[in-house]
Image (cartoon, rainbow, N blue to C red):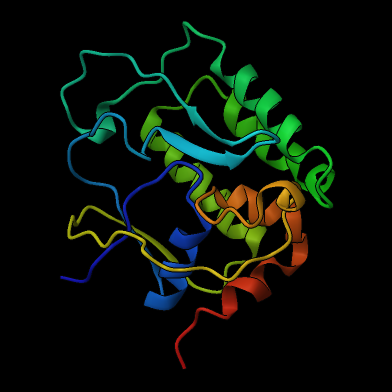
Length: 188
């Protein structure tokens, strides 16, 4: 059984770099849902600190990731949109990609697993990630532990480079050069 990456919501730059290093983005969609993991949360580089954004879920599901529904009791989508605008509104490429990604947050028909899958597919395509994507039910995971090369970020003059953020950060800061950035992690 080949190893696969965990199914993260708007995965980190290191997650994508690990997939490029592996030669394929294999994502393990099976298994149980674990609370307080990157399946329902992701970090962005905000103007004051790293900001953890979370998608609330409906409790009482059967435990499988495929069964988890997103709670619409809170206006979490609006909070995420405001956070993206605050963190990346002044980035070089935000206005070229925001309208392509924001509909993921406002689609009320999605389960959490569908949102995770679509966030991965959309980011992979927009980043021009140079490897194939495959979703699998296998569950032998490899956690992303790549050290990534710094790239320009909106608030790096205040905080220095912040590596542990969603690949949204890479896309909004490097735009069409994101694929070139990720290619450096390919072996051979």
